[in-house]
Image 1 (cartoon, rainbow, N blue to C red):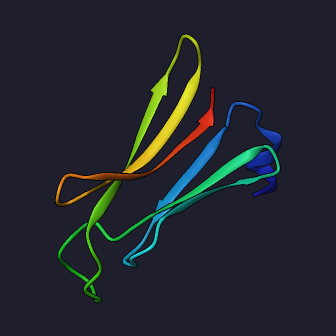
Image 2 (spheres, rainbow, N blue to C red):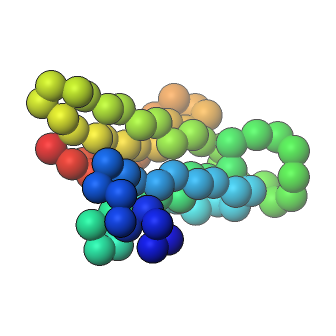
Length: 81
């Protein structure tokens, strides 16, 4: 993590796993985001969804949200604007 914090070009880190939770939270000058269960394999019966990341270059911004399998969107967050 210290390497990431020393690189000013790194703004956020996104990971995921086979669980039914998702979140984004600030950590020092970096955003950490976790994405939920997306596929049909693995274990558990959690609702499936995918974290979407939208990056705009001019002006620079990063937004993220969860798009559920049924099509609805939740957990909108603006990481940088």
